[in-house]
Length: 489
Image (cartoon, rainbow, N blue to C red; front, side):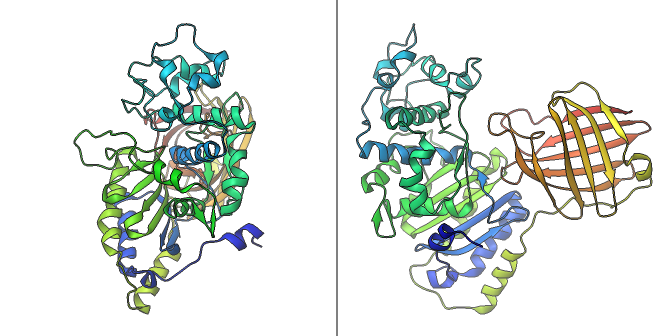
């Protein structure tokens, strides 16, 4: 049964033509996503405040949150706007004034000139993203890590994308309000919009990560975009100052290098400017909240796409959806609407293709393999093959876990730490599919379906040995496959 929040705050739905969009254009958009982009997990399109199309590629679903990465930054900006409006601090307060005890011994001459507004506009004067300098500190003091990175440009004059700057905004909100940023937003943003169970990762200091780490559902992202499109107005109530919504999404600093892509249109306060008069909150691997004021439209997207595909995805929006938005209603066409509805109801990620059995199954099933020393700290692996699915049981130095795997289908499992990203989460739910792709090769795909990630495991069996090749779909680090060797016990 839906909760009270879901019943009362769910966005209204409408047929596309009633909001001036032809169903075939949306169908074309979806087909291009599948055929050219490949790893989009969900989307929701709003026009005139109503949902005209939505879809989730199973096993991703409406009810599941998705890790937003840097789209989190736009929510942190919102908290800052609210805190400034409530008088907790001002845009021109020096950053050092909040953390005098963390002032570096050998501080940069320009550091005292850094203000809150410079954190917001990514113009701190530092020449690099401070993130790695913060999170790699053995003492876990991310604030000190940020402040120790030299300020080499006059703050406010030089754009450098800086996730550490967003963390500092979160730290300032917590220092001045006395509550974590995620908790500060709860009564001011999440409750009014009907956003439930917002989860946000924290630093070792117990401060909301700010720049990354927020997980929300697709409709939550769409509501957030609609709030900004309406200049902070929601259901007749001004829950965010209109002046802040305007300033945050307007050009605050230029970052143009002459190349006409959506990352060189300028930056606001934790929002990117786009071509076509649009703006967006943006997370790596294709997490988008795209607001198109001229078309009175919002598009929310979650994905697991490569960095080089992120511009391609935006191009599809501009080339297909944007021209399809008409100023007036269009004639209904039941056939077109039914074709789109049929497509949206059948979206799915293909399970692993292959055979459900192999001549060597009886020799392999239930046997334990001891794994040679490896960076995942896996000690043993056991595969059990049964009629409808299989399980992979893994023992590590920290414990043991079993992941069920379906043949020709996705089999949901319990949360796992084995394939989680250490800085973001310790455990995450998974779903897995597998098949014999050769007589001596069992292949699995394990999807962390609340994140952009999935892992492909190929288990090669040779006599008493097993070679496991593990590949992640997207990463900010090396994409080189991890190879594990194991011997039957």
